[in-house]
Length: 528
Ligand code: FAD
Ligand code: SIN
Image (cartoon, rainbow, N blue to C red; front, side, top):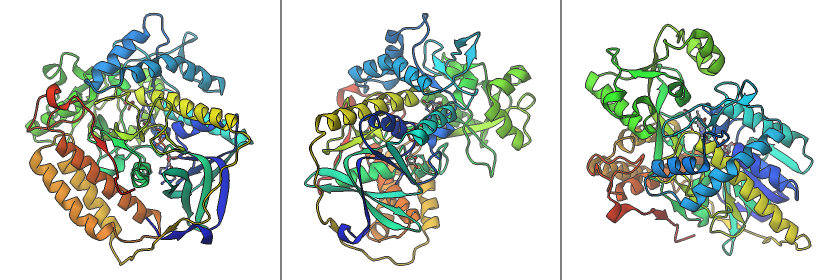
């Protein structure tokens, strides 16, 4: 995206470059560090990412009343025909080992009478969600991994370094160009590179995601020539705190697992009339039911009611939600919580195989950026952290194996990779960013149809004409280019899939159509 001549830039050489310091990147780093030197690059503080905000927990089969078969069946059912069954099987069966490894590093999950406490979320047939510090599971996981990394001599980190683009030569990845606001650009040469940059919720106006989630890694992978898959499948979370002026913080689904009910403006419970599983129906069903209820009552939101749950229980089990609401003067033991849906999780992403390999040599992807085949057309709650842990481990141990086998081989890097510079004229980037997020929310959101998708594609195409050919010199511009680019791919994919499946709802094609659409949509950059 920027003009660069690698011979003119300072460079660093490492065995393995990991871009992203959420659970996926850090888990991969732990594995690789047993064998080789790792450099982790993160565009913000190491601990600023979606992982840090994860609330509900991690789905894993640990109880004798539960079984791998049931977790596999639940995951396949949610995925509506597009999960890869062998991937589902591996992830579910490898879950307990991954959790054990995390606990070995010091992660403390909540317990009841000495046993790990298990709760339930929509679509899970058994209580199998473990959690930490009540509703701060992600923080527990992230802090555990960060503590390990701090002590590990084989791992170094670069915080506040923005990865602009991957370096590829003859179809092989050999690192990336990164940028720091005081140090400018640096070339990182690496034998193996892992993309763990997370999702892209920030392309939507309403989102639960951290500011970092601008889809940079997916865009970088595409530019480098990797195959992307299923970008139309964006998951919307039903219950995000809706208070004007407040960030859209999540109100965890596990509250519904513990008995919270959804009521409309008139105080009427509505989910039983939409689905037999009521509040614990799959997320897409709950999200769309809320939107319909908002429409029929002409109101901006609905409410999550927890007033029947004892106050002490709420405070201990959901301390984060308790205090967030309290900071807006809402005592949730007395008042219902205002909520509405928002963009939450990118199901599609960079296609990877069972070892986390992309189709570019020496390039891996793990975590939310990747499309492993676990989620199909819809993700079960708490299956993401599980996937990040299992695939972070798979990618990391595959790389460690390769480096062990090739211990005495060196990798040579090209002397020069040169990219031509482009022009930059003044643009109000904030204005375009906001317009894009609003457009995506309005036209490529929870409910889609041909007319709105076509409008969105046209508008994004128009903006792209004068934004994509510019050269920016800071992350705000590069992120905008990545977001524009990804929005276009999401809208194109959503337009192409002329059916309703999982999280992808087309009001003009409201039925699932297995005959024509029980298949993935692949996207490749043929010019890379
Ligand atoms: P992230 O944790 O998002 O990390 C991405 C990293 O990439 C960051 O360090 C970022 O700085 C870095 N990065 C990005 N772009 C660049 C760049 N250009 N240059 C350098 N660095 C870059 N899932 C569950 O299973 N259970 C839950 O309870 C749960 N709760 C959630 C609650 C919330 C509010 C949200 C938003 C998500 C939740 N999810 C949950 C989903 C889950 O948290 C995420 O899918 C998962 O944490 C993603 O981890 P990751 O490592 O792939 O990415
Ligand atoms: C939540 O706690 O509701 C989020 C869980 C998830 O996204 O998996």
